[in-house]
Length: 65
Ligand SMILES: [Zn+2]
Image 1 (cartoon, protein in one colour):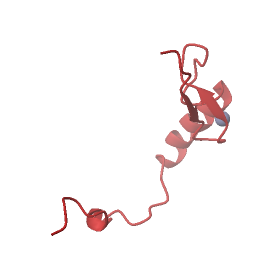
Image 2 (image 1 turned 180 degrees about the vertical axis):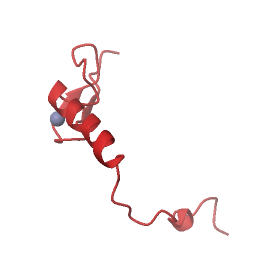
Image 3 (image 1 turned 120 degrees about the horizontal axis):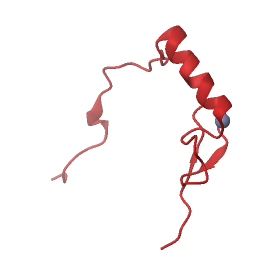
Image 4 (image 1 turned 180 degrees about the horizontal axis):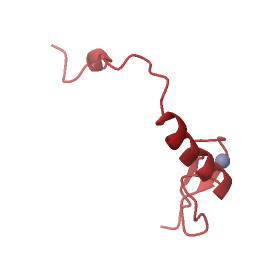
């Protein structure tokens, strides 16, 4: 069980190894981390909303009969 889990940097999209070698995870680098922090400070991290009242029932839950 030594699979490397990689994720994508939320800032630039580079793949980042989720592990000790990536101290800035989930960011690829300190720079991206700072960018993210900066966005927090400046814009309160506004995420362009895609409709917050998403209809979560589009995925049918439970067996159909
Ligand atoms: Zn990055």
